[in-house]
Image 1 (cartoon, rainbow, N blue to C red):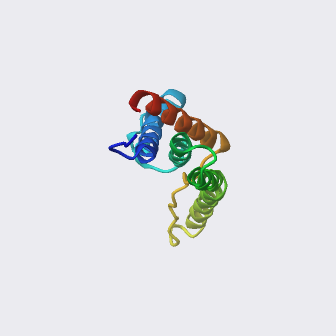
Image 2: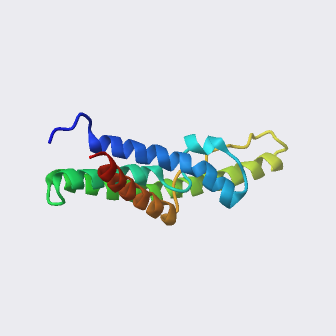
Image 3: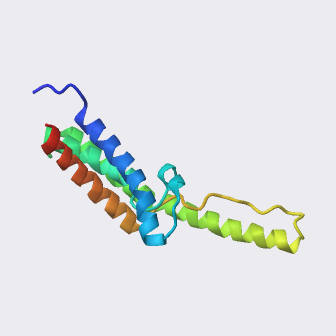
Length: 149
């Protein structure tokens, strides 16, 4: 059966976009603040990186089988992406928060002769945010498969 579009690519993109869009109402519900900019930023619940990678791997698994080399590649890339989102990128965000506090204190001590840094702190994800992104990506792939194909 020939498809007129690339199912894994479409599934991954839809999962990524949906994960980004979900951040805004979820933040309103949980944090009681309306912040549409969250749809265009990194970090937060759910992880769009994890959703996209999981959706890509799931779609490839559906189309080519779980024993295919393509699925193996996608699964490994998915695992690396999720590890990076919850590990390295999250710790970089924690470091940015600490540096922001240090430079803010230094600026106060030097009476604003040393400007405070304003580094972006929300870079990575908590493990739960990565897990929710994973589940979202898998579910989106199966829903799209059964609706479209």
